[in-house]
Length: 262
Image (tube, rainbow, N blue to C red; front, top):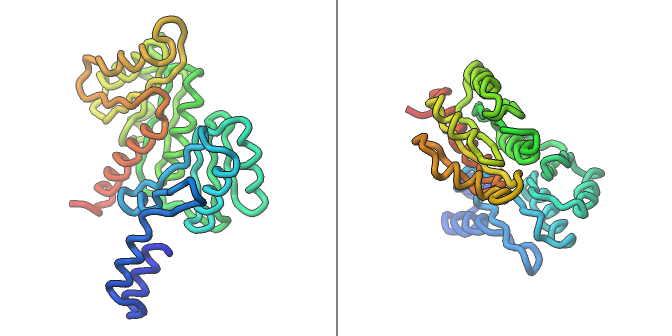
């Protein structure tokens, strides 16, 4: 039962205060079968729903998790899909609205009448190379599904510094609240971006590269050792973490822009 429905029942006197408290406590965890305990109260607590990590789930567990969450809460976001799990997602198309990104390995399954609340947050997403686009696509889809508008610029790494500067101009023209800068190889892009702007910048290292440190370690260490103060960094390929951090910042800024917060 959604929180609003519980509060309406309490306001009408249909349930007692103790009953309402008990029902609210039940919102925090949903047991799905014998293996999965889904944190359904996360969106209530922090404004961000739990996102299903598909990569390590068997077919039956994944299907059960998606079905339970969509039926009860209207929407499921599924990240890091394996190629053999695509058919599971496509099976939901008959009954639900399904968006599937093969590039980003992410899917959104929701009821036909599900509506996204648009927060007014604005997020800039930039990649150093085209190899980083799959990670960027996951950031983009999550951010948009959580109510933010995104502005994406791909293949604008520092090997052609003029491209990086032009990308920043686009972000300023659209008044973005935060930038997610994505890079593999030596991972220099986020440091350069942050050195040129007062906006919050989230560095997202990717596993794209070769040779020593080529699986993202060099990019991560470079970002962590940045001389540019204020750069925030997430783990290698952690597009979900970067997206959620960016959304949290952008949504808060949007509240001030609307005058909802003093």
